[in-house]
Image 1 (cartoon, helix red, strand yellow):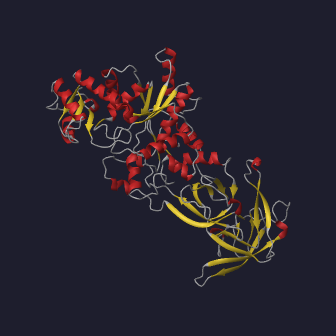
Image 2 (tube, rainbow, N blue to C red):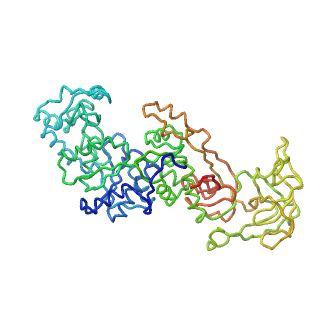
Image 3 (cartoon, rainbow, N blue to C red):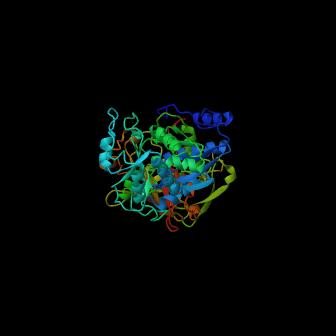
Length: 564
């Protein structure tokens, strides 16, 4: 099994409990339209886990001819930034989706404030002077009820006055909060007088210094859904215990629109961190080359590595949607990348660790231009020309001076086939003073040219190569998982010190090597993708690649044992 829990697939031919809910709502007349929303907080870059929410919200709305809002839950100015807003927009568009409306939580700050005033007037909210630590102590535990704050029974008039003074900036950060008055004995801790507003003298990326009080997520989120006209608020199961508070806010604030929250199991992938806080730590501590580092599970990192939007959305759809928690093998995502690229990526040859070969019986000044298909699986992509002359490069790994049994590549006295070219035979090995092999002297058989109908002797080894005279220097970046713990999301404890998490970082996650590519690739551009014979699929890096020396990121290897 590629996933630990059996999941219900998203595609239209299989069951989907959220789709069933929406369909029933429409057929019963409970709803006459569908509006969903994708509501990220702009405090980091989107990652592969967010792709599931994007596909579900946009996909279901499209299926029922509805609309999807892109909304930024920007209620915490200390952690949010315009950079994150811009990156999220880019990622959603890159995945192939267009939002119908763009909103910010901050667009509704005035309306939220008015809702808070309404709650105070109804006796449903009060200003509390307890510190954050005292509030935690008063809240109780899962087995013990909480205690009421000594400020809980302030009069409506006093609460209105204090709340307005909070808004006017008269109090320091942390000195006062506005809390809902619900039930300190509730078995659901989220209903034990949750904080609705806190004082924060911080400049907001969207509203500047207009506000010095900001709503908490659990208060702002349902109101945003209501104000935007959202019908189906779809979120992951960690918010299931928050749903009673969501419904309480909607009811007590007397909103005209009554959205309903439905939860689905989030997407976890092996060897992959799904915490923006931890991903930010990797960036801030310099473990990676920014949020778009190809080792990061961010959408921008996957894009820079060379993953395609089609592969990511196909992967998400295959993992499905259910209430259950599941961890998907990262190899499954790589499978969909291979499936997508095999019909898109041109074939070519690149040498990552060069070893020079001199073909001693080939004319010194002669150059042949050989024909090769750009992609054998897609003949309409046409042909490419490959130069061949007296000196070529092969891979160091394709030669052994003293080979083991069943080694079919090049060794002294052995003959191999050069892809698209000729048979060559190793005649002499040249070494440096330290005994390292630095050059091979070979002979070739001109009667064995590929494509000429040669039917003579057989050879078992076929090597890729690059003509030395025309070769273009290139850099290759090979990747291993950034995190060594295969199930970091299942086993992580959010209360652990960050140092524990950083212990999982793989120091060998990036290997940079230098080699050569075919001359027909001299004009490659960032995000161009290729299949290098025997090595895998590579993408031209968008940050470090130059015209003089292109940089290629390994997307995925060619082979995998993964099976759907």
